[in-house]
Length: 347
Image (tube, rainbow, N blue to C red; front, side, top):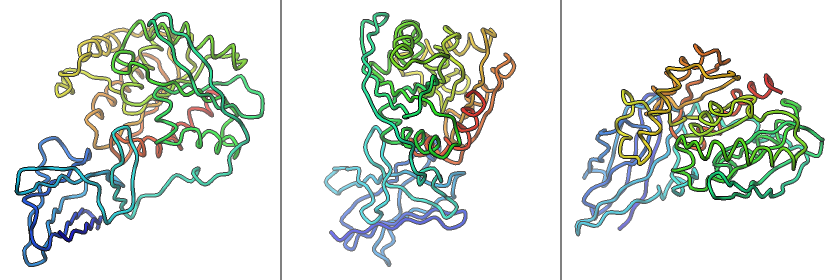
């Protein structure tokens, strides 16, 4: 089978094409998180041009991550990357093809010279969850007592280049020097789902050990995306003295009125109970908090609502809706100006 893929963004329209000279395939479907659930993403075969084609209105994004599901006459299906599009975006479930529209721009900090510094591993016992973790920590050569701690830290570094952001922005003098501690997720679905035991392990075990190791003299700035963002807010609500500020991206702040599609997640009810408590009670002390969320995400409604709730509780809230989806590149692209502004405010 001779196959080639074409994809382009033209004005308000997206077009995806797959050439299939002898119509060896029985169907093609687009897989992407930028379209609502239930959208018809099936291609139509164009016999005159020997290709499968899908045209869609462009959603409110600058870039699209996608894969193609190919159906064969014998009933087999397979997911493939776009073989004619070399642009790739990484993620925890493997690479996706990436289509960039003409108005997309990479962050400028990707090209900044980086401040000198070094990496080390810090062992963190977590007796509250009968576990442990090894944090990967980057420290600038310049002494500092400031610390930024990131949930899903290895993925933040690998797919969103958080370490590169820190070194570049410090090197450019746009933010003061700080240590960056990348926390691995451990038992992610349990720890990051509003677990009181994990919040205690983070605030009472991990962060004091990090502070002693790094010579830190102040509360940390907590960073997290998706469930990792939820877990940072949960820890701050239960142990507020440990945190100077929060930077949450597409946090999984589930509420029944917005997120019934998530009810099969094993810890859905625990998360719902937590978000309900936040909405009812203004536990403090409040801290500066920035929330970002993609314009086409299912989490957008619950993030907007939580931003308003926290603002009413006295938090210094900034909320940004970004033209992307629930992706690492989308989170990366929101670091500047949003994380930059928060760090400058706090540090």
